Each structure stands twice: as C-alpha cells, then as structure tokens.
Amino acid sequence: MLSSSKDQEITSLPKSGSSAVDTQTTGAAAPDTRVFHTLDALRGIAAIGVVVFHMSAAFLPIATPGGYLAVDLFFMMSGVVLSHAYETRFRAGMGTLAFMRARLIRLYPLYLLGTLVGIAVTLASLRGHNIQAWDSSSLFQAVLLALFFLPTFSSRPVDQMFPLNIPCWSLFLEILVNLLFVMFWKVLTSARLIVLSLLTGSAVAFAIVQGGSIDQGSTASTFDVGLARTLFGFFVGVLIARHFPRSHRRESNVGVVAIVAVVAIAIGGWPAGELRAIWDAVCVLAVFPAVVYCGTLIDPGPRLRSIATFLGLTSYAVYVLHSPLSSILNSAIRHFTGRPVGAWSPYLGIAAVAILLIGCWLVDRIIDAPMRRKLNRVVPSMQASRVQS
Image (cartoon, rainbow, N blue to C red; front, side, top):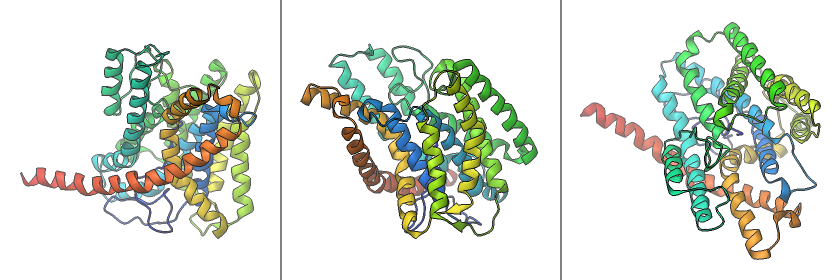
C-alpha cells in the first residue's frame, strides 16, 4: 500500500502517553491495554520506506528498492493489533456492523483527504500536459468510485484500482479482509488459521515466482495477488496476537534498533533478477513474521518510546498522503527551477520527509483526530434516532 497497514490500525484517539497502535473507541473496555511501541516504530519506518521507494529520484543515492515490501509488513501488524484489540470484544458481543463502523471511522477521514488531494492534482493535470490522458468521463467515474472507497477495474486512463491515490489499493483490501475477519472469526481457530496461512503463503510464493517480485496487487489484473498478500499477512498477524506471551515485555533499546535495522535492510536490499524473487519470498514468508513476533516481546526504553509513538502516530497519514503530495512537489520543482527533482537529491528528499512527518503530525491533531471524535459521536446518535423513529 502499502496498506495498509496498514496503517494506524484501529479507531482510537490515543490519550496522553498512549500509542496510536492499540487504543480504540468501541464502547467496551479492552481487557489488555498494553501498547505495541515497537510496532509503532516499525510502521513509521516502513511508511518512510514507501515514500523513498515512490520518490526515488529525490533521494538518490539513498534508495529502498524493496519499499513495496512494507505493505506486507503493514498487513501483519494490522492483524496483530486488531486481533489483540477486538477478539475479546467479539466474544463479548461486538457485531460486524460495529466493528466495520470502527474501522471506517479510523481509515476514511484521511483516506478522503488523500483522495481529495489526488482529485485536485488530476484536475490540474487536465489543464496542463495531461500525460495520463484523463478525460472528464473517466475522471468522474474514478471520483465517484473513490468517494465510496471502491476500486475501478478499468485499465484506462491509468491501470490502477485507485488511480487518484494509488497506495489506497492496500487500504481497500485490508477493509475487505477486516470484513471477512469479523464475519468468520468464530470458526477461525488457530489450526485453521495455520492452514489458511500456508495456503495463502503458497499463493504469495507462486506470485513471486511468476512475477519476479511481490510488487503486485494495485491493478485489476493483479487483484488476486493483492488479496493473497493481505490474507496471508493479516492472518499471520492474528496468529501472532493469539500466541505471543502475555507476560511483561522486556525493555531493550538495542533490541528495538536491531528489529528496525532488519526491516530497513529488507526494504533497502538491492538484489535483482532471481535473487529479487528469493529476497521477497524470504522477507514476506519468514523474516517479517519473525520481526513482528519479536516486536510484540520487546519495548523501547523511555528515550526511544516517544520517537516510536510519533512514528506510529504519523505513519498512516504519511502513507495515504505522500503519493498526491509527491506529484505536487515534482510539478512545483520543475515549474520554479526548470530542473527535475533528481537535481536536488538527496537533500530535497530528506527535507520532504521531514516536512511530511511534521505536516502529518499536524494533520492528525487538527483534522483527523477531531473528525474521528465527531464521527464517533454522530454515528451512534444517528443509529439511536433511527431506532427511536
């Protein structure tokens, strides 16, 4: 999505000192309020890796050729967090509609913001070079579907399911798998999850062999691969959530740095050809499950915890906003300097990430968090009014 995974994973508005990763607002108190600070850090680092991957010209010689692997990591972390946060609530009676309401309140506001920026970028391109050959009919169709969080399966003018904001394909697939999760969680025993993970993992391995990498899923023709990636990652995460030790986690800055370094190496690896396929398969099928499991066992110390929380808090906004914003940056640099963004690398890219992180932190505080609070108030009152009528 680079989906994701994530994102931010749940609908809560974190209280002071809490993480964005595993607090939620669903009406019932969670039995375990622990915070996955290490997963916060991993989400933030992975989101930055996606930015570097998509804006590669602005960062050279810094590169993350495996940045697309971050999406698989997002799916796994989402499975951990949602299983940990909601399975007890499901057992207590939380239904499908309540869970999907919570997920949509968490994801839709920033998704909508990213889509609106993407619409603005596309409208501007219609008045400019329009290198993607948009027309009013195709734009209207893409906008209508996007506003309802639905993909387009047309390959024209852009062969992407979410042409106005391409990374949103992973968010759609995660929402779809979230729906399957809440509908069938009663029959998803650990044994069946293992079987499902083996089957979807085999599908992911086959797709890697066929395509040469796992950088697939954003187009209509690779929808099945994207779904397999989402199912595998999410349900491996659910398995991890069900079986990691519930004892007090050990604090280790060195351990957290080592885990983050493994992820950085995974998305920054340079292999090509057959080695690229092997690299992707090893990362997705073996390294990432191990990394996420270790991330549930180790916490950063106080000095790193605030950084981890910041990275987790901004990760979803970074992921969902960076693509249309990068288009604006590319056009602005060309317009005002007459030179491509690569002429200013890597300094432009580093500055862009710093501004993006600060901007996304402000977006969370000023736009996203207040909007989610309002939706959490308005949606139940709307439901109540329907019942009374």
